[in-house]
Image (tube, rainbow, N blue to C red; front, side):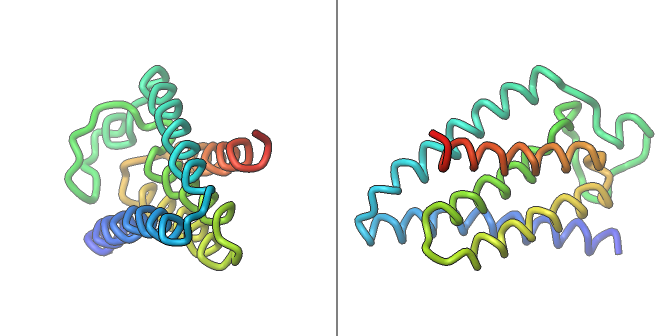
Length: 148
């Protein structure tokens, strides 16, 4: 089961992070003016999020409890909030804002939740890390696409 969680995390990561350039290609082919926001909102959000995470710099579960993570990981600190889950959530919000149907966005948001669970099970994040990362991604998407 442990190897399965690590493999699932890796597969989901690759699929979602391939989905983002795919969206940008769709927007470019359509000649959509949304492409600028689809690039700017995630980029600015990711940069701000990364800075905040580096400042907070909380340890990871394998550091706190002295147990190895399910898959090899040597990162020290930078556990809170989860940048993987944040990234998937902001990509989901980008799909929601840029495509007329919400189905791809819903699939990506559900994937963010699954990835969060996998990262906790794998021992690389605490539940609070993935919950806050998810909520930050959703809020960044709401602010960037709907309030600004």
